Image (cartoon, rainbow, N blue to C red; front, side, top):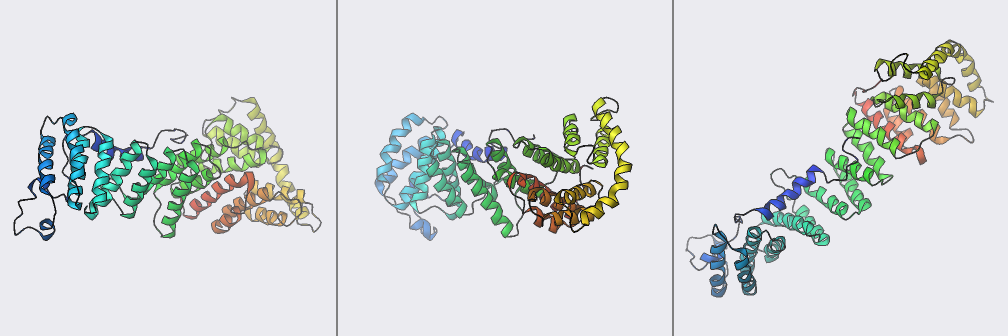
Length: 446
């Protein structure tokens, strides 16, 4: 599997959290945009901007603020000595302007002292002042969320993150999609995987509803979390979207292998999954081909078995003459194909007879499907679906496969969407393949 089973946080989220960590670990005081310098508040000029002239600071606040501000800016700033002065300054911050200035001072002091709690206090004071500029509201809401997360205060983190989202906050190398993704990560950090996946799924649905492209990182993260924690059926929904949006050979291999790993499929279901695996080039190990041969059954589908074995030898996965059992299956298949082909007209006649039994109709569908005669196969699967005791999941899946073979991608997706139960994950992958085939994207297998 490629990057799916690792429990570590994704690189994307690590980069986002790095913003707050960088603020926490810096040694230089940051310039906080939009803060009026309280140390010079008493020296207003007549030509200053109206909003600056309206700033309100008491003499007591300015007198206490100025030495702290100077001390913080010193190259050898002593945080331990400054901290008690900050505590004494806080009660003096009464006006909104004073609270804004106090918040900036606290935030910078927290950076100097690498004190996350004081950084958070500063960000909260800035936001609570009501005087922060619009851009700074989003910025400090996001920073407050990140710091609160580092302090494991998830409720507070979620509240501030929602504020940043509402403000449409962005930054260099940080998109609105990244910010929204953080909300899902908060759920994941608390091991609330279902809730986080639901949130992420809603984001994806909203993007699609607006006709916007879905960030592939959202889908990849959903697959990673759902697979690592075995959250079903959500994992299959994310996998379907993942390979539909980005059908690379690596993603298809992960999708097929993931579905196999999470399920203990019997022969018929495994056969349909491995059929897809062959289409998209995920059959890489000797056992993949062995399982395929066994599931197909040489005496039932000799042409398909022959094709699988030839694929295995062509790729070098199973060298010709290296496996006596495989050699024997190829010999049997070659001996049966002529006879099997000769029997096709009779099988078609019997399966089309008004009194045909379900077993005969399904056998005809399977046989014609294995020979690539998709129109005839689809006809028999459609008839089987009208008969009592039919395995609907099997008939619907294979009807969908036949429709894909006929180039009827829309019909195939509609058919495959009706599959439920244990076959649903396999049908969802085939539906994703139908989407890929409809776009003209080349298959990666045979």
